[in-house]
Image (cartoon, rainbow, N blue to C red):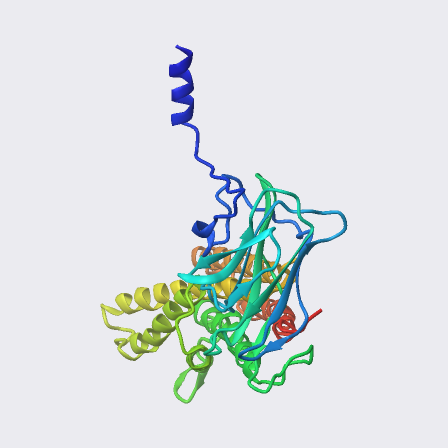
Length: 389
């Protein structure tokens, strides 16, 4: 009877595999230990240290992982990836018996892991770039395991940039490649945090305020809406092109997938607009729904793409840029909910709101000020993202 009970207990207990031997290739991409527990969200008590901000083909880059103070770790997984990708680049060598080489991304020696569950406070590995110089902007990521249920995933080093003129030492990078990544991120932030959002707000909530006001024979709200959305789509296209010209490859991960979806739908949106029928046409509602629904989907995907992009370049322990973006998303959601509720109330109470049409303009102005504050903070963060502390 006891044997049957034990068998049932084993059958219905979730599997959690631990690997004190360090054979953790199954976690190469995600870097998440298969321990049946969630990663820690607090600041990591461990650091990943490099002595430079740029590298060249043939360089040997020392990478040190260590605990702060008296903190030790039992397990770890270290790899180098191009920023925005999960695929390991380059190869490692180690001289300590506490570490071993693994084959991540089907490349021998592309990752380093522990050899036992003994406590460790310091490990050094030597990383050598690929001969092709692939991984133009790379980061070292390390998962630290303190115990079976306590671990920190993908603790990142500062960014290193490929520089053909670099010969060694700790000199700062002189290549302009990081500026391309910064430009890509900045254009997408401006597009989908500010110009795109304002264009949508004008079309949704400010038609009543500009009713009867014409410019170039068109309603004023329309004259404002079209240039804003044109700038948004144009900036998105530019950001899309420059990052692919820079990477010259498919990086992998969620961010490029989301970015491609945003690009495709943003390109379709003006095509839908050009194909619209006259306002009096009985089929006009089809355009209204298609245009509005596509805009909503683009907005959601763009915000998700921004979140994943910030996670890739925010090397701070606090992930402050991701938290700032979370604050912006909450600010925007609350504003939309308030404006939508107000619009519904005005629809059912037209007489009581006839004298308050200018209120929408004031509310959008308040939103714009908050929007700019979040935008500036994130643009500053992107500008400093590749600077070694």
